Amino acid sequence: MRAVLTWMLAVLSNQVGQAPVAGLEARVALTLTGPGGGTWWIDEAGVLAPSNGPVAAHITTPALTFPDWGTQRSSWRDHDVTVTGDTELATHLLDAVNII
Image (cartoon, rainbow, N blue to C red):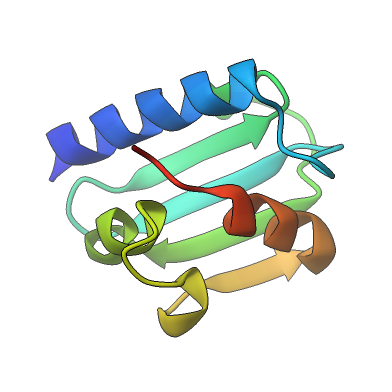
């Protein structure tokens, strides 16, 4: 699972870096729980390793469901996705995720 997530997050980073997500005006944390999981930060530059500093929103979801909704085979709204903080910001990002 780690290899799948590593690839998906690398592609997502390239996508966000090349075509910034409308409304992504602050850093968002993404935590994938379970096998291969971890926490990453996403901003207009792409996907980053977390460091010190604030995040405006935090998205938490099981790693095993990320390949399904992260490729828009299903909606993230149909999965166990929890958002804290700026829900509007997180929703802009979640709606834009389409890793291909």
